Image 1 (tube, rainbow, N blue to C red):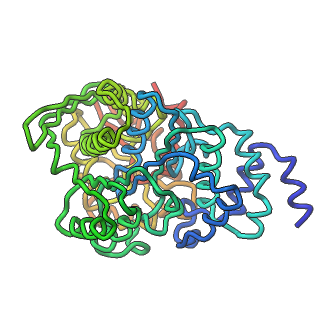
Image 2: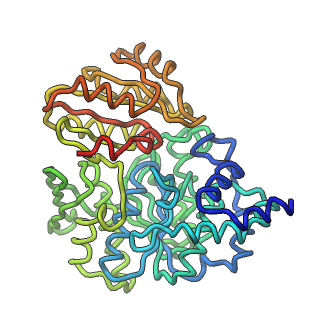
Amino acid sequence: MVAKIQYLYTMDYQSCIEYLYSKLPMFSRTGAAALKMDLSNTIALCAALGNPQQRFKTIHVAGTNGKGSVSHILASIMQEAGFKTGLYTSPHLKDFRERIRINGEMIPTGQVVEFTENITHLIEALEPSFFEVNVAMAFDHFAKEGVEVAIIETGLGGRLDSTNIIHPEMSIITNIGLDHVQLLGNTLGLIAGEKAGIIKVNVPVVVGQTHVETATVFETKARQLDAPIVFADAIWNTAAQSISPGIVSIELTCIKDGSTRKFNADLTGFYQAENIRTVIAAVDLLINKGWKIKDDDIVKGIAYAKKNTGLHGRWEVINTVPLLILDVAHNTEGIKKVVQQINASAFEKLFIILGLSKDKDVEAVIAQLPQQAMYAFTQAQIPRALITEELEKMATTAGLRGQSYPDVNSAIEHTIKMAGANDLVLVCGSIFVVGEVDREKWSQ
């Protein structure tokens, strides 16, 4: 034990990350076996650090889809309003440090090493999960750097998620879909109950999407806790939207008085309209609570969300000839939105590079995908990935045509050779498949 700790005090960033990956159970790689479905480890870690989460204001964001985009857009608005803004999200695409940002800047490598060295004794004693350590690291970093507000995205669920030790200024729940059913429940109502766990006493909650099976769950929980609740889609309608290279234009209409608000977003994809609607409802409530946020801050925060916060993988164009797009959609509802975007796009032939995780409802995801596309089946290089041969077999049974490739970059290489200048090539199905794309090689 002593020898191991002594070694850690001399490690560099790469050996530090390797230690965290190898030592700590990691849900994104191995699935449910890595989860610790209670808050005790996070409470113990943060208590040992002096409860850093109590030294800055927070906004808590949960949901099945859209919570990452909502978190980034909201953080961008806060940055434009002049607040020193922390942002905690997961998982990362390329660099572990993407998870922990202040005003868009990733946590320095030296601070990752220093934090890990300082809590080695706690890691050895508590045996926490990878995510639990990430959360404690984020809170510690934000407190030490004096952030004024931090946007905190849940990892999985809400009630027992490691992030759920904060007492936020506001809770946001984007929407509810059938994802992680083996862990959160197999009905929308049960999943909503888990997400509703982030609602706190007297803390306002914004729900992005009204659904007959989930609305009463949120309303009941909010009433029990005297938490004011609003549904964003009961306040704003999406009146119009259009897309041009690098920009999506969105017009919202207020249901109550008919007034309109127009925004340009650098997070392209029509599905961002729902996320922006949710953010607007949340920001309006924050302003009513006394937060100093101007209309211009909102407009600029939405316009430069990707630039300000470094968000990637949401209908992200990385090449134009042919059109090569990355999207981290990985469950049934997410894929539905992506297919809607495909149907609104102009192209000659459609190629889809697909990889999935084995703990998803694979058949349901495949059923949403367009049969006219030519497919390249692949897998991420993690234990949780659905092996390519099995994915191809299931897809072929469902009527999809394509070939298998051992990794996403070989799939892109072969697909690009087949695609014409006016074709669309989409990589989707898994955050981890998108994360393994060699952007330098394929970006125009």
